[in-house]
Length: 157
Image (cartoon, rainbow, N blue to C red; front, top):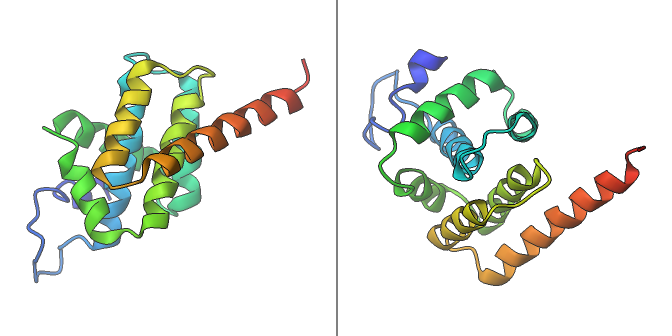
């Protein structure tokens, strides 16, 4: 799988050969790369963040999650800008799907129980690039913060 996904962002948008990656696969990788950008944002990669990204990707992807995370890490490291990822999101995703991505980004950011200013800035930037309104940016942030508070209060001490 890794070998066939390597050229997702290098591949031209229109290819007619049998090895051309489909739009769904490209979108999965773009979303995973943006989620991985959140993990990198505060320069402190926490196991809880990796567990959270794995959980998010497992729900959305039936494939090998660890392999997708590793590929997302590589794509994230090789990317020169967020445009490589956000342009695919804008081209193929509905507004609701974009809001779901932003909410998942908040989930990753809050996974280590603290939100850094760098994570907040990155998610704000991605939200702007994928045309998510400021009110939905705030709504998704508060929803994930509330979810985190609910999970914490339900855990035995």
